[in-house]
Length: 213
Image (cartoon, rainbow, N blue to C red; front, side, top):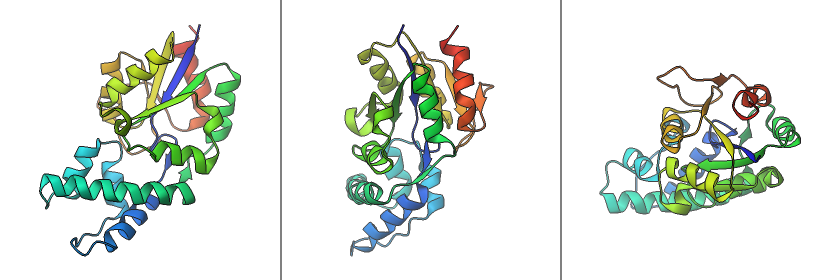
């Protein structure tokens, strides 16, 4: 039986909000047509949202076409910066991934990010060997629930669970028909009572409740 654990990225595996905010600040400073200051708090406030939602929130003063153009520009600068500077891994991440792999679980990432962001995370921190597959909103243009189901189906998983930190992660997981674990390490709260972990080191024991029964 093939068992999988699907992870959200931001707030669940790492915190890149400081690095992302800095890269966006650099990007926008090069634009003579824009006067905009993006802070780390701004970035944390939109982590986990779809690309359209991020553009609509952070660039609300511009028309839709301009919002999406600015988002695309900032994301391109962001990807390159993250690829060379990384982010802050959550405590115990690699040790936890090692334990999960040793227990026979297959690991995946599903995020609402742009193409290149997951790749930059894996490349900079040299974690690619732990993950079998990943998918993003930028890769498919589909909502997270669809991408969770897509990863489960194309990897032929018999059992799977999703770990995320926001209400949107929970709702997407319910749409995909998977059990959900809340990572209280991250940016959000869940409006219903759900299983949770306070730190990543608790995950190997927690997933047994879903995958080994």
